[in-house]
Length: 313
Figure 1: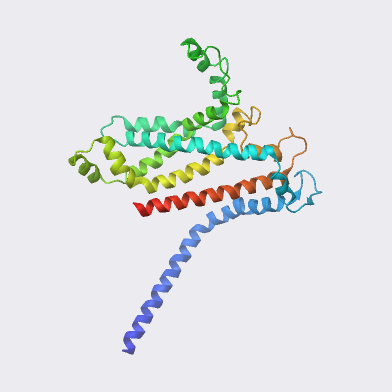
Figure 2 (figure 1 turned 90 degrees about the horizontal axis):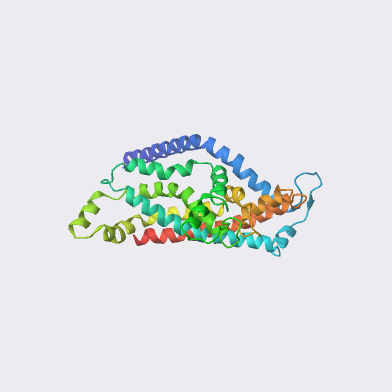
């Protein structure tokens, strides 16, 4: 009896040692990535927290500690709340469109009967690898008053006179949404393709045998199966949309009349731009952290929705 107990203890000790060795190897391989994350993400975040408590331009050595004064000022800053609302307005406009369009493209391009589907996938993905600033500069020309879009629309009498898409406060943000949709849709198409390719062919065959057409198969069979994947894509899409900067900075710089101003352009303008006078790095850090906290809350909420969808499926 004692011999068996000793054998079990020895076996348990051996398993624990092997598990510790495995964990040690895992941490060893992760050490470089964790180190870079702490250096380039963790440390700047800690610095931002410190700066948010200071009245500091970032260009002098006379930083004054002001506590939560920057945060109190934010609550009264109309331009901050305008950028805050615009950020979420942009998210609410772009996320459903990106999810729907990218899913449609992925479902079409996942059909094995489609000829040259690899070429189509490449074509739809090319805008993703194009530099956003280059896209912005080109789109300024294309959508300008004298650009080809206005020329074509006036030529077929859809517009009576040229429309300044980016210079009109009413149309500027929707225009940016459409351009961003074209630019980023390929990324989410790839994610959807990964989810769709995880659905067994037997599922499609069973649906066909039961008499379901392609539309019915998608909505009643495939979509419920890829819903958890869709939850992850929605979270990524929402968070990425709240971080938008380069496209807006290049095309409108937050104008006209702050109609396209989002938190990223607001923070940039306060922290680095000289157009408002002396930069306010401390105030900009407070704005970034305040918005970051809001994004975390949104992310947690979306993750809860994703978890519920996973349980339903």
